[in-house]
Image (cartoon, rainbow, N blue to C red; front, top):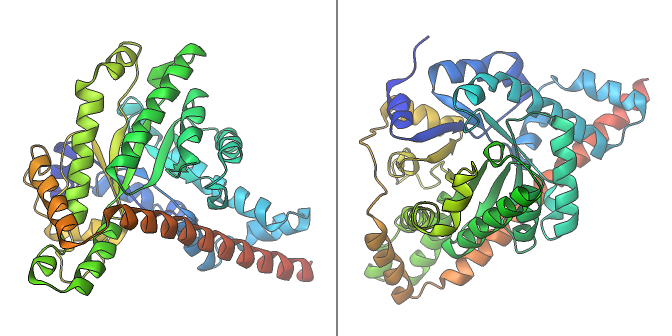
Length: 374
């Protein structure tokens, strides 16, 4: 099997290709291994919505759920067992990529319970618990970048645990995330942890920004407003990359940590499936190419890039001034960016909570039925 040339070009340009999906069927059928071999996939991200979708389809989980029902497991324990088993198995599939990249890639992410998004201490406790349960060096624990999540990120990194920070929408919040990562590395160093074994990515959501801002621009309805549709998501991500470069390539604080083996916290472009059919379906991939980044894609987007994505090297570096101009124009048009990012964060947490509760409810029903049969 050979790698798809478009995705290979993306990888060669410095973008790690990750799959934003996971299921037991994908693992056991060999599909995940095939994507590694033919689509340059070197990582996997999950979230509560992905697990809810995986467990609601087919019967691949029935035997394990029945076994757990016989043991008297409740819905929460069942979901935790099933999801951590899948993530552990995916970590094993990607272990060669983890080894060959010296720990940078070959990563699989699992998220803390989204209902803990506003509780720092419980987020830290569950992150440590999940790290121990999965017990794989190429695991990422996903922690949302809420106000309560920022100190949790620092504490978890300080424990020597690798973290994928999720639900980042604004550059201002991203700067706090990078600060938390550096705080955590300094704590980890003081605790005697090997900094070269601690990795992190910062998941910056892209298409959701366009969806929210485009709706507001359409409501304003002026020619200036309508002309700005579809520009905010890319501009936001490009400004985030400029912030990444300042912190990890220019400012002195990280350089001392780098001397102790620390790795920069790479930007990860998430929510890269195009929501508006008027936009090119590869837009959030081919327009966000830069060294030391990650793009996690739903399979539909990955297939589109493989089929007709045009990768022409770095499309981010040097775009900060033009991107800031887009934001200045949005503000002048009447877009309240602070409110946009607040709404997006609240909706993001709520969507994951809803998916998690649906997953728990469906699992509880499966356990009930299994208990009746036994």
